[in-house]
Image 1 (spheres, rainbow, N blue to C red):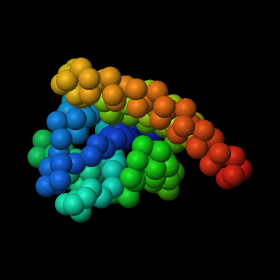
Image 2: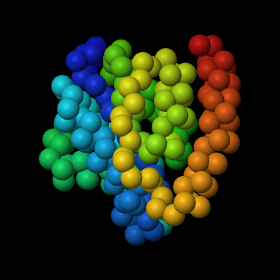
Image 3: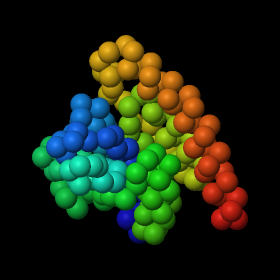
Image 4: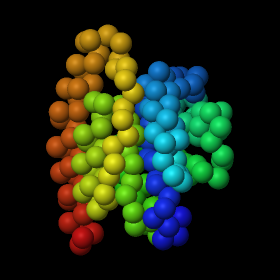
Length: 174
């Protein structure tokens, strides 16, 4: 990806795995939405992000990578980021990888609808022009109480992560 703005990175934010290391419905839907989006673009580099899950030890990124390959994505069109344990860490790690590879163009962001505003804001704060990937049409949670739990969690997480990132950027001197 060295200074190649013709390649669009598609960052796919992870979601917790089941205890046996398999993907949850939420994770499968995020990857499927990213894949459908990517097929309608020129050249893309899928960037699944998410660290180890316990007790399986598998990473969210590796499970997403396996799903992408199973859907026909060539392995060389995937750059997995397997260290991040949360959204903010994913933003920082993916930004670092993209900059190391000389990427200067826009970045597409794939996640669930409830999580998308936070991911877009954090990526913008890191200096990226972002393109939202249309989220899965089905809600991440099937039960309305769980949907409202996740939405409520984002209400608190968005300003908190934005504050943490702002402090990080100030300390870095950006």
